[in-house]
Amino acid sequence: MTNPAGNLYDELQWRGMVYHATDGLREALATDHITAYIGFDPTASSLHVGSLLTMMGLARLQRFGHSPIAIVGGGTGMIGDPSGKSQERQLLSREQIEENVAGIRAQLARVLDFDATSNPARIVNNADWLAAFDLLGFLRDTGKYFTVNYMLQKEAVNRRLESEEGISYTEFSYVLLQARDFLELFDRYGCRLQMGGSDQWGNITAGTDLIRRLRAAKAHGLVWPLLTTATGAKFGKTESGTVWLDPARTSPFRFYQFWLNTDDRDVVSYLKYFTFLGRDEIAALEETAARAPEKREAQRALAREATTLVHGAEQLQRAEQASGLLFGEDITTLAVEDVLAVFEDVPSTELPGGDFADGIGMVDLLARVQLAPSKSEARRLVQSGGVYVNNRRVSDPQARLTRDQAIGGTLFVVRKGQKQNHLIRLT
Image (cartoon, rainbow, N blue to C red; front, top):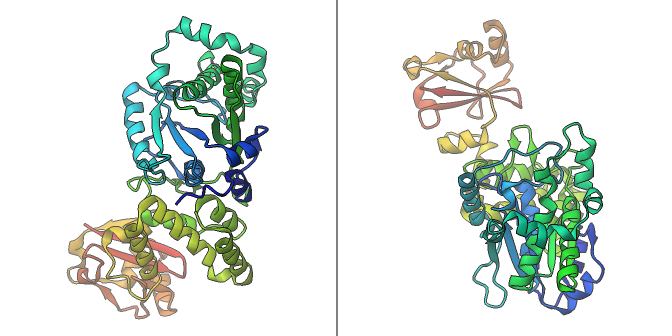
């Protein structure tokens, strides 16, 4: 799976993942075996789709024959990174951080190879060294090499100083901790490159400066752009909230649908960012998207690749099957949990199952769940062919629904028009 003959820098640049880099990095990646690291903030027990870009950065590095290190910040997580934040973070307990670290480790293992023969990936926890420092020792061995003026020039610090809330001494010192991380990894593993989003540039260069001062050695940094959608919205946010990598937080079906709904203006960039598809494959999908955007072939490829990467082939197959059945003529064969995943954000009403023993009239039901303002309007809707139950049109106003018609005996999907869905759950 590796590509040692290619230059990782050129690959990242083609994929739009070079926003800024230190001088000499292209040559170093072309001629040397480089060990590089990226930090992951353990503020939750799961990473999200925004973190996936960072994970892909490490995975690409490994596929080009270099050695990746993922730091799960058990130490820095107790402080909080002010980068990109307008307010102070809520501090987590040691127990919460340990729980979050465990969840993140499992997700990193989806994209990194920890058993590779020549360049296995590593996961390290910076609490191993940061928690061992005493305050006076840290100030003497690290803090003395940074002036306050230098730290005030960092964008993340500067932005917070201009805000009403300001910045605490705790978060102000974060840049020193991350610089120390880079030095420790340089000493322990020969790590000479740190990568991340563009908001991390100030933290990264603090580390390269510390290595230069204390070890008289050259270290590098590379950052990619912070992602926004074509509409200017923050990437990875939907109306229903964050899209997580943990299937318990965001179902594989919803995860698949997130990628399938990618804006035409974003899809080619996302194929470069979030898949391992090559230049020819992406170029072909770009041409298809320009020629026949209604087919959404590029979005389907993106959804397949991303879902397989994070959740595996079996969950992809299930998501695609649910998608196909969802828009077919009959969804009664779907599992109840799949239907609930599809319609997770749809309004729902619980009704006693006993009410369906002799059947409930379609007109009465529409008025009861407020899909129609009155029974007369409900009757008009049914007669005009604008009502569907489990994706099948109901045109007879005298029709009755019984429990044995429900999906799994417990669920109806009632649709008004083409888009207004309502779940009815039988209790």
